[in-house]
Amino acid sequence: MRTRRLLDAIAVLIALVTVFPIYWMVLSALKPAGEIQSLHQRPWTLAPTLDAFRRVLSANDFARYLLNSAVVALVVVVASGLIAFLAAVALTRFKFRFRTTILVLFLIAQMVPVEALTIPLFFLVRDLGATVPGIGLNTLGSLMLVHTAFTLPFAIWMLRGFVQAVPDELDEAAQLDGASRFTVLWRILFPLVAPGLAATSVFSFIHAWNDFLFARTFIISATDQQTLPMALLVFFKPDENDWGAIMAASTLMTIPVLVFFLVVRRRLVAGLGGAVKD
Image (cartoon, rainbow, N blue to C red; front, side, top):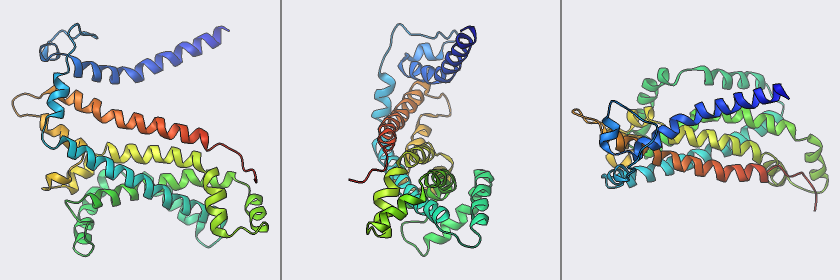
């Protein structure tokens, strides 16, 4: 009993440490400007205000940045999930040469720092844009392409484990009942791998939604193609930063991630159903 209480106390302490930065972000967004700039900071405010949120929502192109981020994140989630699912099935259900080598390459790709690939990717996207419209610099297509490429190795590795957990006998039983390979793929494997797809979609969404490095690198001059993290730069000023607006914009950026996670969490639970023939 004493050990259980100690573990519970440690878990509560870890939860508080994890949640505290989020609490301070929301608190700073609600504080008046005088309290934010004060040298004596308090973990509460007696005069909460929504002025910082009004400044953010009234800023130029904030809604446009929000829409761009949503489009990029959703396209990356769908594209990476579909491609990773098909790749995981191929690497699990079919035997071919260099299959292990491909898996090792996926693992190595995750070890390379993103910063080391930014400059080569810049030149690659620039040259690709000269031949493929909508993929070059100053386009949302470049962000979609790069984010999908970076999320695929992790998604394939995770989905491979989920596909392996589905017995091969289910495929064989369905084929004996007259199901085609396409039917087995989408009506049997796909629903059973839904928990893995939910997990990888959260990772893909967060990776694309919070990205600043690629958005800053590939979107150079087209302000109408910039994403939401770029909106924070508006409130960084040479003389004095508007920390209230920065915290308010960060809070607004966090809300869609939480909503997406709650929606996917329901799908994850719903995808845990068994394989039962009607």
